Length: 353
Image 1: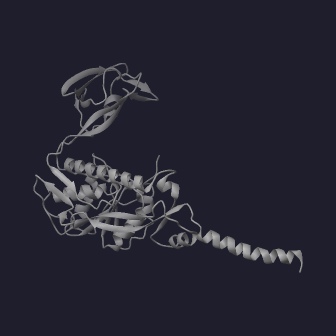
Image 2: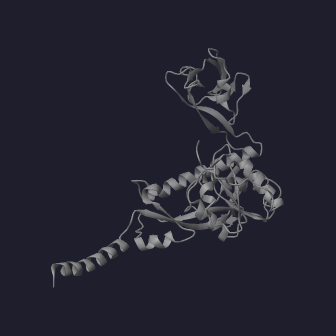
Image 3: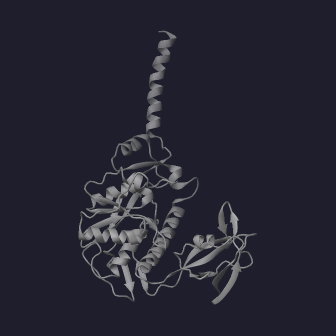
């Protein structure tokens, strides 16, 4: 037998062994699969999920469903065969381990961070819903003052901005436009609430890279809510992505009638106190889960539109929702007429200019 033949005979079992080793060795990926959806207008453990004290509530037959994703934990061993099965699935997804979990951490930390994000999203959802109902629960405050800039020594961290020039300031005021309107070399009076007392200072904006600035970082603060709203959700569910659906459910619970006119609407999206809807992960799996659970309409954050447009959603309609106000309008219109014209995702959504 020649040396070449011996080499070939030895190579075959080595290749087989290598293939087996590769097929069953853990690989640095995680998988996403559709998770359960939850009707936030329903009950959990014998209590309403949206639990309100101090304000009338209105319960109805409609459903507003938050969506979830089942993600493999950081200690899961995923081999090539498992990943190939998920790859060919029409609903599951595969992502690099580092994208989901980073380069350090633990399952305990993951759970803790998820719960912090969940609680923060619930608080923001209450604020957004109450704002839509006409309650003044948000305000604009100074979160930082830049050294060497005009505001240094005049404005302080924690100041609540009440007025710029003659314009009354709220949390949604476009402060940049007000500052830009100040003539070059001119100053503007800024009134703030500092430790409970009004203070007015004059600040002369400077120009950097063509932009008029006073040198402050602004943040949104929250007044105490006028009544108690608690979201009772399973503590094993974490993350911020149910914010939009929490806010819609709180709004629906506090207003007469059914926002969905008895229909079933699902969706996802982070939310801030101003009602702005943000990007989430696992949109395709959430859409698949909502379709499986009978949702007829799904609300999509604009940043997630590109992936949503390629999802498997059957006859379930998709609607683009950039704010809580838009989502309320869309759900109301759809509830009255399931064929109503609604904002749609486009190829331009989710891209930056």
